[in-house]
Image 1: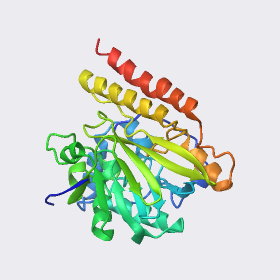
Image 2 (image 1 turned 90 degrees about the vertical axis):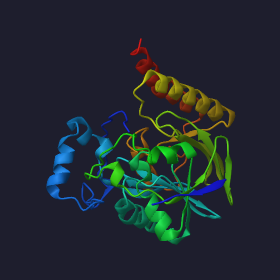
Image 3 (image 1 turned 90 degrees about the horizontal axis):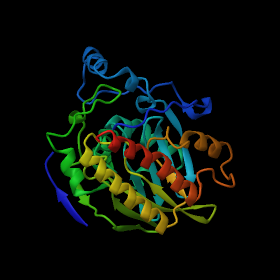
Length: 320
């Protein structure tokens, strides 16, 4: 891995019935704007967004009760987006960091503590792709805990590309106002990363974003090994060429899923793939057998074919 130092999403809109036990605190998180924006500015920015987005789960900042998914894997975050926390013998590894530094300090860190883990043990942050709801808290962990930021070169460039789309978050921040990390360690396709007793494999899967990546993770459930496949970005791009590339990425991802016999699929957007419902089951019965997240390789393939592939093929047909 090479370390590089520099200077300073659209998704399907799903509506889920949320169990009351899923939500802690008030129904929506309060969040300081990064640039200390006035209420009028925030309101004006949000008013420019489609009401279908504002009212969707992608903008739902209700806090989900921190949840242990497997022996070494946990979730903290909102209904809209969250962070996976991997507890390894080499320290804590985070996968994505939500919308903002405020999320990092006031949602992720308290969630980690509530799970009985120690934030000071955070050593690495993996960024799956360069939308601000995934990298927004990365700078905080770099600055506060000295965490090493792991991402692909193409995505580092994308985050700093002045031509990249400017996104607005649920709190009125523009993605250009979110502080990005000051350094990163480059990771590449097919790279196996060993964090003590835990192994992850990096898969380059553009084109949700140009340098997006997916992950294959080894986890255990009551000592029984399982393989998690995390698809790095669900929303489809705008052009025919980019959608063709997206489909190629999906084919590659599925090939590795089958080679590794992955039997669990997860998303950093917990409103998808029944993650919220399954986390509720896990909290009610922590030693639940079988773990509801273990769906088996066949059902994982069914998800790839019937949802992800069908979606991109339909989009491609619209260009004809």
